[in-house]
Length: 342
Ligand code: TRP
Image (spheres, rainbow, N blue to C red):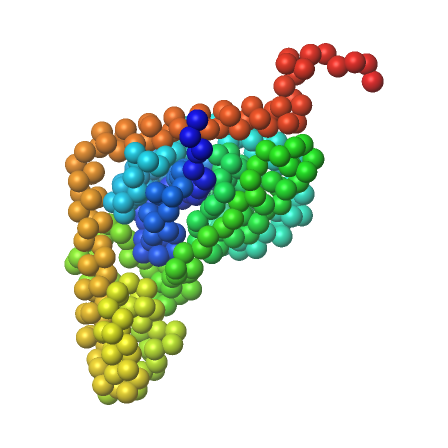
């Protein structure tokens, strides 16, 4: 048997189309690493308890995410696109792992805490399924026994929990899981077009990978910039200015960016020129992505084939892990037979 490649598992929740924050924070790394690693890309449709009243949206988003992945150049021949619920072993593994996860450890998870505080649940309260999603995520990562988890910065606490559980399991029950490493992208957290801390669908401050050129132009021209600058001749601030953060992130012409910054602080360039150049840079980046998206949108059978093939690969990997886990935990009752009286 040829030695198999090291593995990646990472994922995204199917709650809407993907944006530039996903791209610079994670997707770019995925595309780069997919030759070197065997990749399991998960569409995490168990992680949607906050959208449980809108399953049609989840269903549509599963296809949106698959299309966005194909559009950025993830390759379903070499990599596995896995819909989480097509691998119900995740639920089984989560139950076993939850035995070893203290409640307080989960309550202290900073990402979970922040998300629960933001959750718009009204009188309903936080769903139990939301509270335990990090445990499900640990199960996701351990399922294919991944070595590397390329994600956005906000996911780091979940990966730390994964490492802790893997260590404990291996120590107590024998070596089953690698201790996975996180990998954060080039731009760990992209600001929104409105200058808010994070680009996100719910804040309505996102530029989507599927936005057409005109939509990108409109969003960029309306971007939040230096609020202290009233005229093009006023000296401007580059630090903390979202327009320049996007130039740094998405304009490959470093000399152009340096020139714009230099003129901006001197008050020698208008916002319109700075933004127009940003529109061009982003549209250049997105053009080939849009083209590939259109190709697959016109061929839904190819998307379906990718999801079918990936789901099968995810299922097969899960069967191997689950049987190793049952053995390690000595829950393979019938194989072991009736124990001696104790
Ligand atoms: N929670 C992640 C997010 O909101 C998505 C996700 C689900 C994930 N399962 C995962 C990420 C496993 C990495 C590994 O983006």
